[in-house]
Length: 207
Image (cartoon, rainbow, N blue to C red; front, side):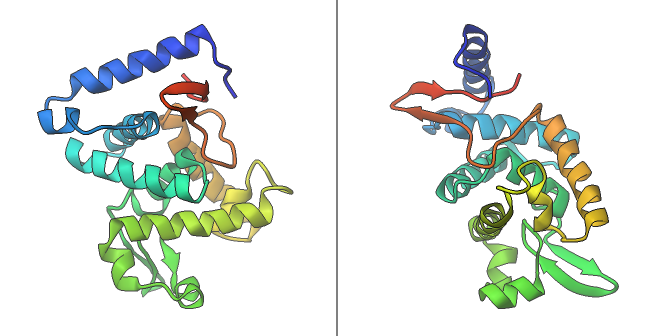
């Protein structure tokens, strides 16, 4: 974790300045954003560029606000979920997963039909309601974290995908690839940015 240092504060202020004044659309600049949403938007822009996703700034902002809301609500790491969404569905670009000719995974987090039935989820909403889709993935990861993070703090998240060691290793490498492209070197098991009334108490941006 990066401490509340002069270097970190400078990087943070630079980020906020760039985001506020580089946005060409007045409608975006007028929307009140939290520090967390600004940071998520910045990371999402990196994914949009490196992944060649083609999202507009307005779309990215809406996605960022949904990710902020759901990851805060369920106290899961926002950077991890963003990397997971890239790995699972191309950040929402491929919402139906096919395996051996059968459609088995749905939504931003590619939740499979077994868990959809177990959790009584709506396939229609996983496909058509982005906030619902993102939130159900965050809830699923929260459950995985609560069950396994204490014993496996560095790679518990790969159990979101599989319990098989070989498949977990492959999945971890894919997630780490996207974390690296977002300039994230380390992640905690919970939501990382914490501040009150605009005053930063703890900053974990990893520039």
